[in-house]
Image (cartoon, rainbow, N blue to C red; front, top):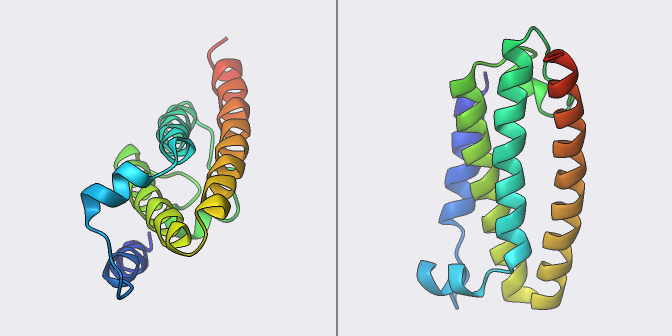
Length: 130
């Protein structure tokens, strides 16, 4: 797993602060609700992927496989989900500094896309349980 790369990206995203930086509490308060819904979908995706892999399946996303492999452990999946969520929220927060309307739109698009991913994983997970 490419854990050092994930941690480096996370540290870079957390360290980058504009001159007009808001504190964390204010950033979380101003965050669009859709961003938190997306993070919830990330968590559901991680849980479902863990279930699928335990049932003999594999990670199907070719963009994620270089980081966690075809058969990630549940711990690897949890760590990846936390890192992905933190990077997503940092990105939405940075975009919100520039254009709040674009940040909400990006959060909505991400929410719908991730909802589709969770729906697909749910069908795969339920097929394996029959």
